[in-house]
Image 1 (cartoon, helix red, strand yellow):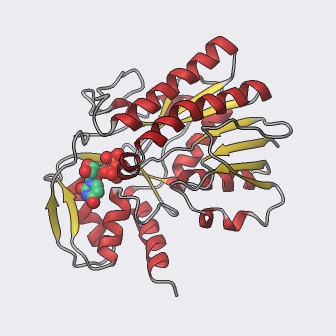
Image 2 (cartoon, rainbow, N blue to C red):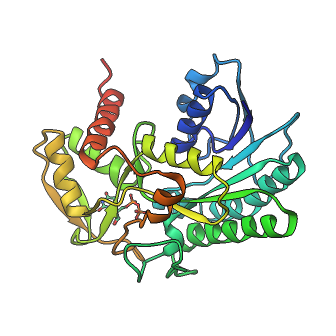
Length: 313
Ligand code: UDP
């Protein structure tokens, strides 16, 4: 049993982590400012006496009373639409927020896990992406605010490990989907699913030949928990290696939802990565982890979540 602080704990992935640690018998302190998240994601947890919530922006000084055994730093806008609307908060939470969270980890002698991202690889020239690859990021492009904040966060995490001996972990998260994604966060899964359920055309950006690899959130959470409990300090990719083009992805969602939506093409956003697929050899070897839920199986569950949200019984 441990006492665990999750920044961004009311977010999509953060709320699933809160739930998981509570299920495992740990005490959870969830910290969030609801900038891109919602209290709805954690409303059901308040009844649990081992759950505590602190409404706070992690870029300011953070203080938590009592012992803390682990800090999982998940606070950040994470969708390209969000971080382009919130460029400075995104840079601040990755830099100042990571600094505050690491400072707290040092003070409390807590283990620290950073939520990093496949975006550190940018528009990758190595495919699939393994953790040895240093990436191809445009620092001044529209995605630079997120990519560079996360790269800085990784550098700061390693610096606290090397200079202060903080026990640190870095997970590089690839595209993930599941319940509690925000319907209007602008990412491909909420966009496509809300379009097909609303009988609207599905907006494929570019010609749809760009690829992504989608992991179901329950698989990701299992990988993160295993990484936290491991003794490995280097970065570890977590994602589902099953790669699809965005056009195939649109057609799959239309089919699974039993929809007649058409596909329409829209301009490709600037610096949109052309390919993305995690090489998960490291996670397999070190953590004995790989995703268990296939693309279609996971998508069925995500579609059901959005259906319930849009068309409550
Ligand atoms: N995309 C799309 N239509 C949409 C939203 C996104 O074709 O309505 C594409 C986007 O251009 C990208 C991929 O889907 O190639 C994944 O986009 P997302 O915003 O989910 O995140 P990313 O993987 O780019 O960080």
